[in-house]
Length: 161
Image (cartoon, rainbow, N blue to C red; front, side):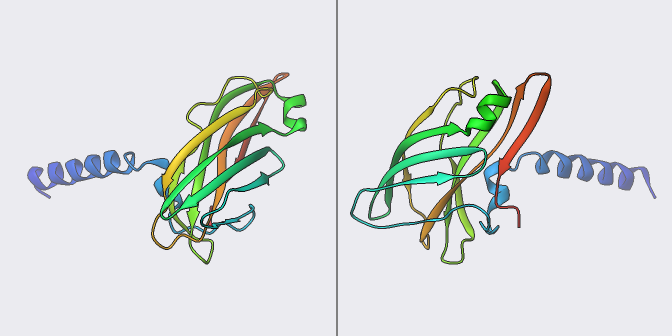
C-alpha cells in the first residue's frame, strides 16, 4: 500500500473517531423503546398532574398540552434509600423522552438543567417543549452517580433496547 493510501486511511480513521464522539447523548436513545419505566399519555387542553417513580427517583409533575406545546413543571427527588446511603451527587443527567404509540423514543431533551450536589435536595424544574409530530406520550429517564460512606453507585433508567 502506498504512503498516500496509508495516510488517507489514517485520516479517515481519525475523522470517524472524532465524529463518533460528537453524537449528543440524548440522540443515542432515538428509536429505543421505553419498557420498564412509566409512560405518561399526552392529554390536550387540561392541566394534568402525576407521579413518575422508580426505585431511585420520584418525579412529581404537572403539565398542560396546548397544540404542539408542552409546559411541564414539578420536583424531582431521590428515593429515601438513596438519601440514606449516598450523600453526594457526583453526576446526574435527566431526560424527557417523547414517545410514539409504541413507546419508541422519537425525541429527547434534558429536563433538569443542573442538579444540586446533595441527594437530600429536591430539584425543581419548569420547562416548555415543542411536542414532536407523532408523539402520544412521554417518559423520563436519568443516568447518574452517587457517592457516600466510601462507596459509589451508578443509577440509571434509560430506554436501552
